[in-house]
Length: 451
Ligand SMILES: Nc1ncnc2c1ncn2[C@@H]1O[C@H](COP(=O)(O)OP(=O)(O)OP(=O)(O)O)[C@@H](O)[C@H]1O
Ligand SMILES: [Mg+2]
Image 1: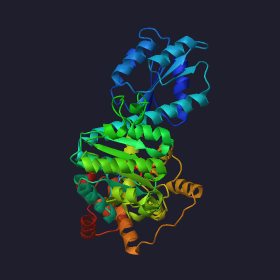
Image 2: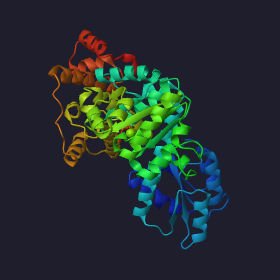
Image 3: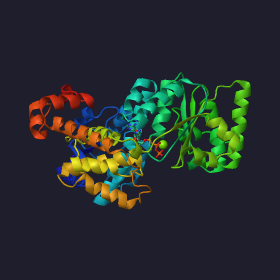
Image 4: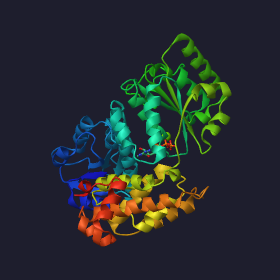
C-alpha cells in the first residue's frame, strides 16, 4: 500500500513524506495534481493525501477526478487553518477525511493507517467479488496440501454443487468466510446474488428487519453489502443466489423461530433459498448445536464443513507463510523473507490461536521488520503467544512429519536463495546430486520454479 502526497510546497511535501515513512508507510510525492493523476488508476493499491490550495488543478478538482477514477479511493485533504467551509465541502464531495494545518503528525499517521485499512478492505472485497464469477480463481487462493486441505477442496467442490444449506464451523481466522465465497463461486449460483449478514453485529429488531424485512429499508442495502441500495430484506435479495449468515451461534430465540418458519415455508413452496451458515468457535459443530434450537440446527447442518485449525495443517503453515510473505513483499516492494530453519521449526509447533489471520499478520510484521533490517520471526511469535495464552500447545504430530516439513522447507529456501543453482544447493546442504533430485521430486519442488 502506497501513500501519494500532493502539495505544491516542497517543505510541506517533504515533511509529510518523511514522517509517514518513519511510521512505516511507503510514500510517493508530487508537486502538482496533474503529475500525480496518471499514476492513479482504478484499484490503485494505496491512498492519497492532497493539499487543497494549489496552482493549476486545485485539491477540489483533483478530488473529483480521483472520485471518478475510483469512487472509494480514500483521499485525505489538507486544509488551511480555520478553513472550515472548505473542509466541509471536501467531505461532501467524498473526501475520506481532512487534516487542518498545522497538523499533528501522530494524528496524521493514525488517519493514514485508518484510510489504508479501509482501502485494503475495499480491494479485498472487490477481488473476492471478481472471483465469485470465476470458481477456479477462488479455489486457487486456497493454499495448502495437507490432507485436511485436500479434503476441504473436495468438500467445497461437492457441496458447492449440491442444493442444500451448508454449515461451516471453525475457530476464528480459519478461512470460513473465504470458503463461503468459494462454495458459491464453484456452484450453479455463481454470478447470482451473494449476500452476507453478520448476525452478531445487530440487535434483534434490526436483524429481523435486515433478514425478513420491516418498515425501514433504505439503509439496509448498504449494510448487507449489496451493489445497489435496496428496499428489500436480505432473504428476498438473496433469492436465486446465496445468503450467508455469519455468527449463526448468536441468533436469539425469536430470530431462530422466524428463520425456521421461513425455511419450512421455502421448502413447502419450492422457493429458491440457499443458506450458508457460519458458526464461529473452537467447539465446532457441537458449539453450534448447543447454541441453536435442534430443529433449526438439523436443517442448517445437513451438510457441514469443519475448518481445521492451523496447528492441525502440518507443513501448510510454512507454505502459507511463504505465500503470504511473497504477497507482502510485492505490496511493500521488498524481497520476500525466508524463515531460518529454527524459525520454521517454531512455526510448525506454535499453537496459532488466531489461525490464518494471525499468520498473515505475522508475515506482514516480519516483512516490515526485514525492510527496516531488524528483528526476527521468533521474537514476533513469542510476542503473539504471550498475548494470547495458548489453549493447547500444538497437538502432537509424528516426528516424521516435522522432519519432512523441515527438509522440504530447507531445500525450498536454499533453492530460492541460489536461484535454482543445483550445484550451489548441493554444496550448501552437502547433498549428492541424486539425493537432491530425489528429495525435490518427493516434495514436488521443481528447479524451473527457481530460475
Ligand atoms: N487456505 C487458505 N489459503 C490462503 N489464504 C487463506 C486460506 N484460508 C483463509 N485464508 C485467508 O486468511 C484470512 C482469514 O480467512 P477468513 O476471513 O475467511 O477466516 P474466518 O474463519 O472467516 O475468520 P473470522 O472467524 O475472523 O470471521 C483471509 O485473509 C483469507 O483470505
Ligand atoms: Mg469470517
